[in-house]
Length: 213
Image 1 (cartoon, rainbow, N blue to C red):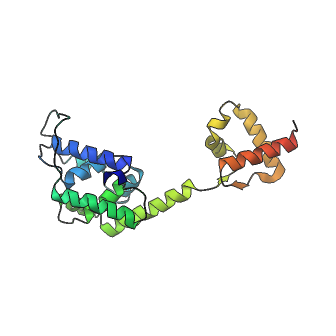
Image 2 (spheres, rainbow, N blue to C red):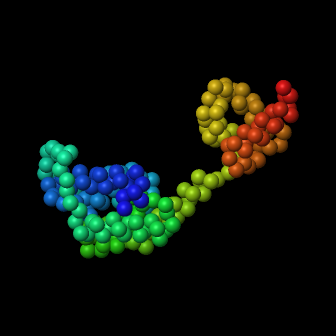
Image 3 (cartoon, rainbow, N blue to C red):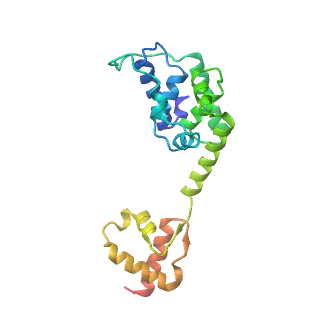
């Protein structure tokens, strides 16, 4: 099952084991999972906490350590609620047509177990299942759009220079800006390209036409 979890979700699970241990518990439960999620700086859950005005440091501050030092060898079992939540997380990712389980799916899964301590804590911050699901859906859609957004040449050229990065690392910025200005003068300053590769082909063609080898 855990092969379906992305790296961020796996770290949250690792942190949940740590949280259970530092609180002196003999098993990993949902509140430990939530504390683990709060430790993990995942973009989607960060957006969730912002949307619901939930301060991760404040929540974690409610749980005081009772163990000074943890050993790395101790294995803690999962509670029945925790095992159900992990299964729910896989279902949430699949129902949203997301490839991997992320910490935000774990939050949705916790809320499907309304009697558990973690869900009750979230509800105290007005965090509700339907609202979270909508935030997660919109966040993922926006992330997908940004990932596939075409490049656009802008008058300042700054964004494009940043996106080009490594391929133009050896070229002096002043020279690149001069080339961009020449291209802008040729009328393609507001052109849009599907990829950096497409832009580079057009750049090469434009330079060859303006300054033949």
